[in-house]
Length: 140
Length: 140
Length: 140
Length: 140
Image (cartoon, rainbow over all chains, first blue to last red; front, side, top):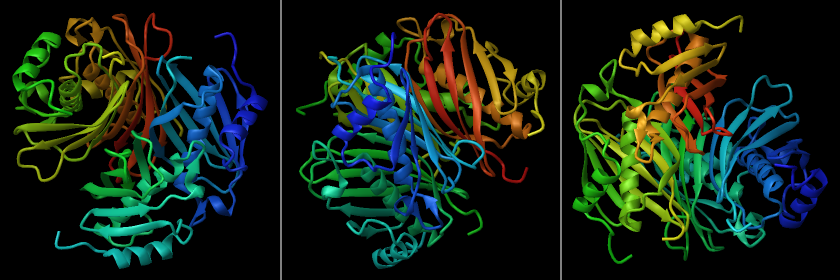
């Protein structure tokens, strides 16, 4: 691969255009060739009782990070959709900054397969690890 | 098992108490011994562009349905947490009523393992299937 | 669907031809439209210490049952390959007859998605549950 | 953690004692604190038609590597059992040396959660990636 098809600025623009309803607290901070990092500063809306970040919020972060990592390889492709996520919840995140690091392990003709690791400031070790598969348009 | 430890009314009350922030559009419609059904009438807040229900919304429905199915066997246990969800997105849901049917396949000393199937009115075949594991408190 | 593209006899023949090395103790006992059942009478070769059936043996049974269930819909397609298996080990199987029941939940253009449940004679409740995805040739 | 509870020699001995039937072609080559590497030189017994390594063989390699990685943290614990494996098959391995690298991401009171990456000599990029969960004895 000779270079990523998206940079941070391009990825933010793509996101604003294709997912206008994405929580503006989600911030794309890095985009490489088949990698992406997204952060979230959780607030009240992302919590469940006990003051921990909700499962759907963590899922959304995983899903979005992997979407951007895939886009970095194939460019903007609106027909790209999640087919499988196997997500392990390992530690309770704190209320501090969350960061999702996604990497594509295999970009095939119709599937993008990889994983995402979530870390939480002040928590030792990853809080979430997920294996992710997206279907990508074959004729690209 | 001689009977469910929760009925629909008890489950709704438990949910209101333990997850006050759960979307009120989510409705518990059935609770059995190790089974539960939840419905959602999706509206604008649940959609992503292209007019389909968002992944995090579908995940939330899966997670909640399995939580209630587990509670039906062990009663209200605030320390019950999701450890793994392997979710397959199979068909695009319509904007009509979504229904999640959860069943516990194994309630062990520390884990509850089962699956959830999501159907969407007017769509032929399930839209989502997920294998789910929750950690349950051992001393119950 | 107007009918399965394979019956039990056809499936056994296909298996003998395409997987001559499959353990002859594996027996195809039912084939429907998108469903299949395989049994295994475990012997010494399938056990690990403690006298329980080994994980790879249970995996092989899941994989084969889902392969046959998919073939029942698309006919013999040598290029069909497993892409994801999320397998939950729930109960210790006995040394009696094991049975795998596979069902296709969605046959798409390039993916077959479904699940497999394993039961063991004399054991109450399923011993294994797996969500399975196969890649199928698009031009069929 | 002040050090691994097993080294390569100890791990090989443990394996010979607890899993005497493990394929002698599987070789433990590295053991760290929460990490392990296993290699396999595939031969005829590990292949399926088309000359590729069979799914159950790849599963066995994943499972064993993760078992050793967990043992490196808790020492020999015969009651440790696989509860979930979500395995993605990404590339066709060659017939050359296979290597499984396992790492524990979280060792909790009752669960060990991590992942395993398989590489194949001469193949660019991982051939298999799996998220793995083992149940470990709580009273250790």
